[in-house]
Image (cartoon, rainbow, N blue to C red):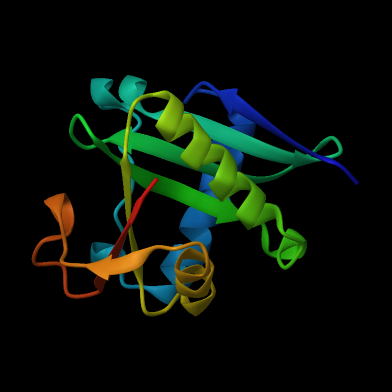
Length: 151
């Protein structure tokens, strides 16, 4: 099957369904106070760029870019459905979002994950992300592992 990645609105029902699956996955792995959700009721959500990756017609993953400062954006809500993992989908989506960030003028991508997601850590380090001190809302968060990459 071929992959198709599309930018979508934060109100897209397919996006919200994928994010719900991500949240379910995270709640199995972490205590709820360690999960950093996106507040879809906050007006700043309109500044976030969201994408869905489709395999054929099936929405199988999503990701987002949230501006941090003038040169830095944060990777958020990055997820591939468990039935579609280990097919290169996450790598394709990550490359797409990095290109979006570059085109928008960002030079640094940051992200937060946790030790209970070794597959995510492996993906990010494979693609050149390196550990950094916690930033922003993750400062003081015991379970947060933060990474960055110059793009």
